[in-house]
Image 1 (cartoon, rainbow, N blue to C red):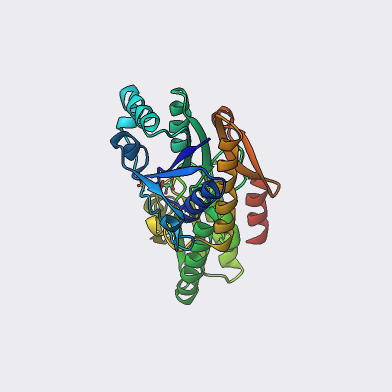
Image 2 (image 1 turned 90 degrees about the vertical axis):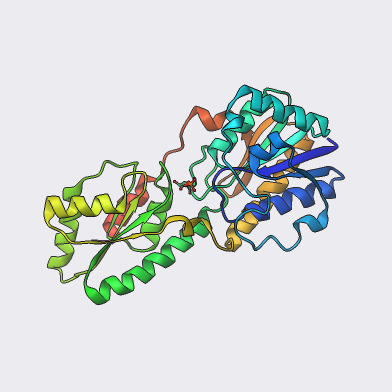
Length: 319
Ligand code: F6P
C-alpha cells in the first residue's frame, strides 16, 4: 500500500487527535503517504484533502476535539454521495482509509468498502458502545469528567441536604452512566439496559434518609429520559424534590486522559498495519488488554452486553 487517507467522523471524542497522530506517524514510518481528510465523510465528497507530513500532527496528542474536524454527512447517506467519495479517493491514489469514529462512522466505512476501498476503523466515542471492543477512545476521559462533576455536585448536595439528578450522555448506551455512577458512588444509576423502576429509586432514597443520610446523587443516562423528566416523575409519583444537572457537551471536551492517549496510539498504529497487511474491512479494538483486529461486519451483527454485575455492585455499595 502506497497511500492511505484518514478522517474523523461523528461526535468528537477526546483522543481522536492522538489516534490521528498515530496513523500519520506510523504510516510515514512505514513509507506510506497519508492524506488527511477534513470534515469527515463530507470532506471526502468535497475533496477536502491535504497531504500530511510528520509535522502536520505535531503537538496534538494532548488536545481534545479533532484537528480534522468532524461532521455528520447526509450526502454520504446517498449512493451518489458514496460513489463521489470513492471516486475522489481513487483519483487521489488512496487505496485504504482509516476511519476514526463511532458506530455510524463504521457503518459508512462498510458501505464505502463496497466501492473497492480498503477500510480500517478505529473506535472513538465517549459512548463506549461499539461491539467487539471493550474500550473506545474518549470513554475514559469522559468518564473522568463525569466523575469529577459528580464529586463537585455531591459537595453541594451534602451541604444543602439535597437530592441531585445528574444527566449523563450516551445516546442509547448506559456505559458512561454506569461506570461514572459506580466511580462516583451514586445512590441510584438509571440506564437503558435496565427497565426503570421509580419505586425502587424512591425506596432507596427513603432507606438512606431513615439512616440519616439526607443527600443523594442519582445518575441517569440520557437514553432513558432527561434529568428534567425524571425530576418531574419523582415529584409526581413520590413528592420527592430534586435538583437537576445536565452535563451536556462538556463530556465530549477536554484533554484526553493518559489512558485514552495510549489506546488511541495503539489503535491508530494497528489500523495502518492492517491496511498494510491487505485487510479490506477491519475494525480495531481491545479485548483482555490486547489490541485486536476483527471483521468490520461483526460490529453490526451482535450487540455487546453491558456488565450488569457492575450495576448490581453499585446497588450493594450504595445502601
Ligand atoms: O455519540 C456521542 C454523543 O455525544 C452521544 O452521547 C450524544 O447523544 C450525541 O453524541 C449528541 O450528538 P450531537 O452532538 O450531534 O448533539
